[in-house]
Length: 324
Image (tube, rainbow, N blue to C red; front, side, top):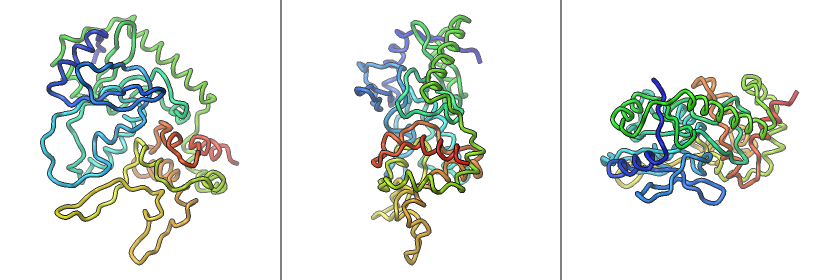
């Protein structure tokens, strides 16, 4: 489908038109970071920036919820999701929507992603061979060009949205498409340079993780098993069920907690902290490729930013990859 163009003025007019019918969220700048905020008529909104502090996944299911029949809520639109989060949705949808389907995973959300124009100091998507823009699991993607945005369609729902709101969009011109491509190439090269132009061989990394426990011992010694890394991860999906008064309660669980692997009788195959620390890497780069066909890490760097033990997870990966 051909790309469309929307001007800055028409983006503002479009969001105001949508607010009565949708629950809309967007990244709002907070000093040097970006946090999700609910859009109001007077919200200052831009597609510029990088990934938010919290991942996109919590719009699709709550980190803690009563498993009761859902009330019919307004449909949602998420503006400004980044490529690392839309990639994370690929794994989450495999887990939650393939048979048996989870009825509590929301399916009434439109994702309007945007190319990254800046990067967080912990971003490393290019180290994994990915790009700083969405390539999957978006309905529309917005790329900054002069005086507005170039809009790409990623789903049937996105195509329908464009058709229903056609008055806000116009056909893209060839020079705008060239500008988008130039901006993408320039920013990708900038991010690659920031990350030392490293690109890991993920198949080689998969084979090395089991062999180099010494690296995990070196870095894991400052881990405090706080579970921050899994809570802010764009693709971690583990949860625990407990009994409520009238129904079950689901909340996010973490393989980094000592209680995670404990079984009846008190046995625990991963009681050791270093084994739990190593397991997270094994899950992302060994188990997920084997079971779902692709990795469980998107290079968003939230794990590093949120780590109470000051562990640089990218540094761990590179150390393992370069081990002989």
